[in-house]
Length: 426
Ligand SMILES: Cc1ncc(COP(=O)(O)O)c(C=O)c1O
Image 1 (tube, rainbow, N blue to C red):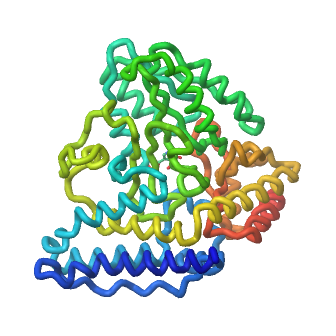
Image 2: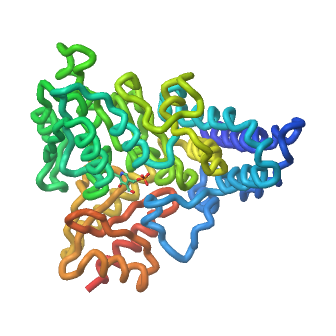
Image 3: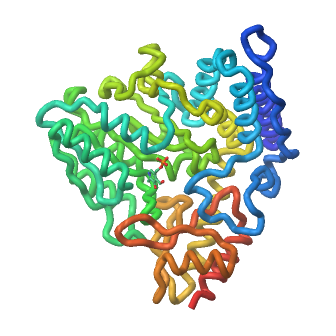
């Protein structure tokens, strides 16, 4: 039943996607768009079929696919359709633009369990964080709390916020040894960092330095307790860089309980490169930074940067959400977790390897980091690529580590090949 339902959903999604793009062709104002490339026959129940939707080189095991997405067939087809429409009669094709943008918001809202009106469309996680920190209204005396583990883009956005507002930004350390990180300890350390003047708490859902996943729900509960007797204008708001949990972990923003979440849709979702979103439920706290082209019709639209964009990519994000939904958010998260667990168990059994990411799936997601004795991460990654056709990455942090990201484009058999290849590195 589930399979039939998913197939039906996908069929409907693809039909709607192509249909809405082509719908414009039938009106006087809209130009004909070239036919989209037909996606290969797709069975969302089959992981082989899912992988076959990508043009990725099958001779390489793609364990760094989360860095920047390759486009699956429905996304490529939608991009081609929109590109052809824009190239054929640009001005007329734009007539459907507002409608297409709303369809992206609705698809994103369905994924997030959110209201479409609360979603701003961005180009990346970094843009969402920049819009938020650039527009956050802070009163004199209010301060910001973040952690030592965040992405450099977040720390830079907060440095600029401090420069603009004068608000102090403090950092807490949530764990000393990532492999031993626990939910209770991380929540306790964050709670201890919250002061009476803390207005903003900025964290990263899954650390791209260590693979540790934060217990966002428990952290939002801790904030709610701290906020209980505060005036709404003084309450601490929880801001999450969600990029490595988004489309990798099976949950919604309602379940997470945070106030804002920024994520690129061009990583684990395999959406169009150069797309992202910023969701929020406390928009009154933020002033727009880049002028919107939609006015104040909804907070999400008001926070969406105006100007003309690479629309063929932006509008095709809808098909990325539909592709993900057809496969199933739960199945994708389980597939990632299954492979990540297998990889961690394999790496932990190699005497020359130090596994950095916690084994516990409750405090980790798809990212798996390790170091290898007697070898720099760069050397290891180069040799995995040249000797074993395995693509991994090096973490861009003070302590560089070897990083793997099993996903829907990798397989458990490839995970085993990674373990054998790492064991063979001497
Ligand atoms: C935690 C984290 N946030 C943000 C980014 C940047 O994402 P984007 O390209 O969507 O801005 C990265 C890595 O690329 C990251 O690891």
